[in-house]
Image 1 (cartoon, one colour):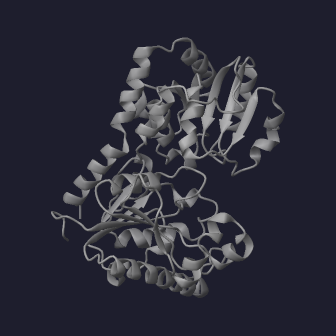
Image 2: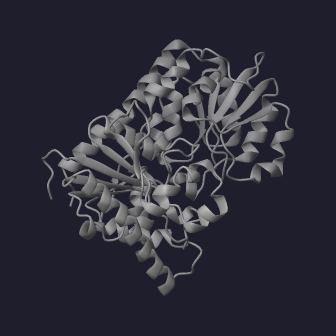
Image 3: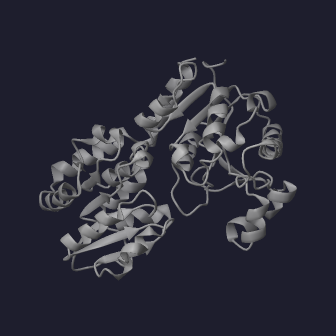
Length: 404
């Protein structure tokens, strides 16, 4: 393998598309890569089912030409990152619903061949001969890449325990093992996930997520305009992120009941409806803001007196690296979290980590009562240590010092 050399580009493929409503760690990493090297962010392919059922949506309509004809398949997306290009591959067949067997295997390999047509065209049109292929948690499109598109270096990254992800757990674990074995280097975003995935001949290396500290530091100053939905006469206890399977809804109810004189602000989309069992929308002091563009999040974070990570403690969350903590800390906010992941240990000096619900509630009270400037500065420094800039430096060290 070639290590001590200058590569011409990074081609990154991920599950999350660049224009999805939620912030994406993969896309943040791609933006950081593009500051140093031309970076091509390849969208997760749309299926024929996606186009037929959701073709009216803007994110599909804008891609119809590349999806079916390969026209305008690469394009710039942000003037701030001139070396970052988005890439739309051809449309593929929907196969995740199929049982394991010959039909799934046949269509899976066909989808990979269709996907690789775009990659070969991308490399040819941009005259790229020496590059790194970075697969960020998408084992469905990683087959035989070293033979077909011949990257200098093939990196596979796992972000979550795929065996605990409802939609992809049927085929995902087996595909991930296969793709990971083909990679030159394998990285995982948490300590627990690294231990789960590592094999004697195919070890994984812990490569935690970073944070866009420059963006979330904007929360340190009041925005020009106060976002709608935020109370003006109450302290704000807040959560920013996906309102889904990971959230402990029983705990949220307890927070709302304990702090009736505060507003519990929930900023993010709903990907799971279990919260309706508790009828949280009927609770007077809980406000659901809905999904917001990542550029708007610092404005909401600014007004929070305490930021929460109210996750359940189970097999799913144990493998998560707490990326959100870095974003909260960059804004100088007091953070109260459940003790859901071993990686929280590294934040013990700057966050409140609770082992049970009662302690969680007490920590919220303490966090709002005892907040001060030295603590804020310590939090900000902790976030800088976990910035995407530092993660990029770690990445290049891994490339220069391969383990296999």
